[in-house]
Length: 101
Image 1 (cartoon, rainbow, N blue to C red):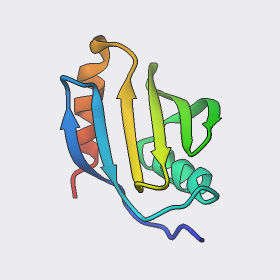
Image 2 (image 1 turned 135 degrees about the horizontal axis):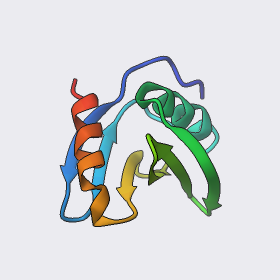
Image 3 (image 1 turned 90 degrees about the horizontal axis):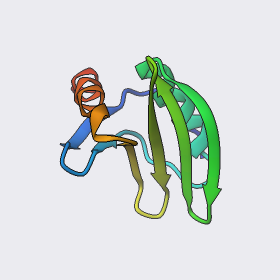
């Protein structure tokens, strides 16, 4: 599966849970890295660390000095960012504004 160039959008922002659900192209297990890199390029973030847990990709990313978790689960077709601390809620809210469709 090839990931086409597209924009990503905010599907939902849940600051109580510290989640930003992201809408974008469909992906599978093998295409997640290309999709995630494309998303990180769109928001100008960088990868710090990558982890693979069965069917879940978990990447620690840096956005302007703020560390967030980028997660992708291909069976559900879900892509989301999670904060590491409630102190990061403003950053998550800001990212949601960047991802308006």
